[in-house]
Image (cartoon, rainbow, N blue to C red):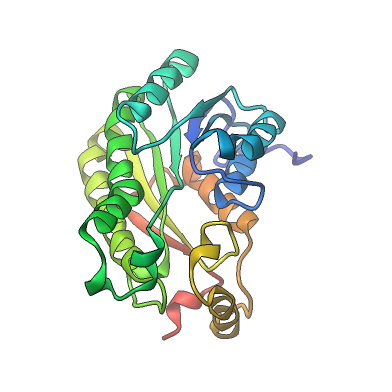
Length: 262
């Protein structure tokens, strides 16, 4: 916890929200949760299944999460059940973090034109459409505005070797952010995609030659390095705070500047 008084435009005191996608203490979503709690926010954390819960339950407890709920967006009514419990616990929601993505290995590693219909639809459902559904489900709980934030990657804008179908899915996700921002803006609900540089997380381990991607980004980035999950967490927490109240609809890069280099 920071020892200094948080300026009002950075404080999340009294703010409440939902955080999805924590797999372990190396997850970007965990760093986001930690940053939000340090700024005074209250959180509900979700887990995907009992296997993942054994790793995330202690983290939720350490962060003082108000609740720890199962969320599997492939299961009917799972998201709606979580949102109902958020309503019961908090009444209103000020922010929600969507940090989930999935693609079958065969579809991820192969040519995009060889991707299976079922695999493509599954990747799009979990990684993109679930964010749209989350926005709709949380809209009634954001009567006084709020922030919806998802996680993207540079592969949405440029071809990244071995990123395959996920690049197409992330492009759709970033487009969804813009359209959601347009739809929800009149209600004061702001929408963002945060696009970190490559970070070694459990999800990243499924990408072929990921270590080479880390090295290449560190070499070309103006800051001469890759970023940390804590840096991504700090930026995401800022987007939940008053200091970012004039922003919406953007994809914001946290990649040591690597995205500006061809």
